[in-house]
Length: 288
Image (cartoon, rainbow, N blue to C red; front, side):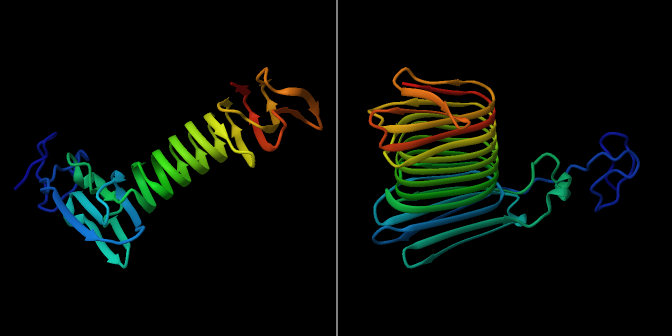
């Protein structure tokens, strides 16, 4: 008969908690499991990763013509994972089979977890959906889409089209050339050395950007938080900035800076492109 490690009371064989003091019963830890698979692909492959359990997702460039998937599973009996191929599309799906409210039974192990690492050809299309932990996509030339619930998103060294969406989490993007779209509900958004067309919508959190903006339409919006933009290269933009509670500090390079219809308006260069900046609660800083 097992006994409670805290109060010494006798425990039922299938008990998850002590009936006397409520202390979780330590369970024997399952041996972690790993899986390794390599798929032959042609052309520009498409990778789809859906991780519905806690765990990291890491996507990086590997050998041309191959997609290599490595899975590290904790509590493997309570994690369901599948890896499949259809043409040049490789799909990885993982999910926890136990509701998080029942995770006290995993006292000491932390519960089910799926860490997913994938190597793809440099020219690839990547789509990732994740629930918890961190998503990293680094070194891809193509289209990158990342959608998370509660996770940090880190995207770096990408040439092409990037779309990052989070409900709660930090988003960091660096060394990207192309089109970048970001949607975040709660958390800071940071873009470093990002060059191209940029659109950022943040509900609650600051925005920080450095890079060169295209001569199309670029916009940075947050409801609560400051916006800091460091413009590099030779910007050619009409600038419109708005804040309800806060200050607007423009770069000396902005010509004809004036207040018009509730916004500060000016231009850098001839004003071919458009830069819209809005925050309800926070300050705006534009500098070179």
